[in-house]
Image (cartoon, rainbow, N blue to C red):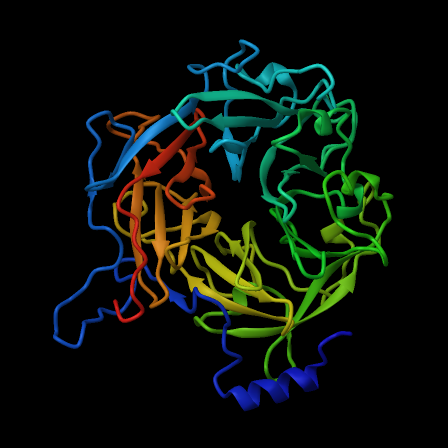
Length: 480
């Protein structure tokens, strides 16, 4: 049943400033140069968030706080798969799973668009695991064993532009194609723009890959599954017009589980897009309209007319006033009874205020979205300080969020605390440009190991997977 404007307005009036955000993250405010108001303990001693300043890396790869170390797990063109080929390039979305005998299994997307001939290290076409033999992308599975040994093999091949994705409550990975290429375009022999399921623990389950057409065909970014309702939430990175957040409602009687998604008919369930409104009941056309941390919008869901979008892209099937858009909808993470999702920036393509990043929390129980992180426009991306362009995100077992930066200039992994402060966790020091004009690749695939001891992240270009360890700690609630 949709949340009526009258009901939402009444709730907002009762709540005063807005409906309180449930969960551990709370309101997370940032702005370039002065990321949050200075806060002091009762004794007056200033307590900085995070783990201290970043220490330059003599190897020129990854700057970390003192006491932290990193290890390279895979490196495109350097490390090899079990089958002998080099690790594919362009690492992107990643998730970590608990394997047998203290093994950690990671599924790693490779964001490779277009024909295989464009790429030096495409995902190998492993027999039985290929969707479209013309496509360069896919996923690899990385096994990290108890003694530190690493092995890697193909999970799926012949897909395109595998950007983000998401893990499922039943222990598999959903890899998302960020493209709308149909067969015959960019050399493809099959239609693309779908979600595929990859099982890290059972190679047999990955044979004869089939797209989950019920989730729709568009420029997918990330996906999460509500473990209670079975609803899927998906983001779209597209412009002209801006993309959408989607909700997929399963058909009556459908039960999730390993291998069940591939049994769905192409039109199974209902795919929907959001229609947001403020506490006064006014329609909100784009999430860039929100300019204050804690902004809460009610959400109704509108059915998608044609989810396969072969003649008209899904996001273009809605008229003005029908749905709510946002620019560059990217990473998602399910936690605290809902999903966190990212809008990386807003500029002239968005009708609201410019920004360099938002993180929203959708609460399915309340049917609301709340703005939890807002990054102001970064005036000097080349300077090491402010953050911009959030992309992949995860919720930390130590509190708050960890965010991968995909902005301009310097690139970081950074954290955001419950009290509204941000702090750097890592800086990419691998210069792909020149000393005069440095260039640094984005971070991707941020996630923690199942035991919380290791933070995994990727440098997308050339494609490096890193394992970061150190003196992680949970911050006490009274710390600022």
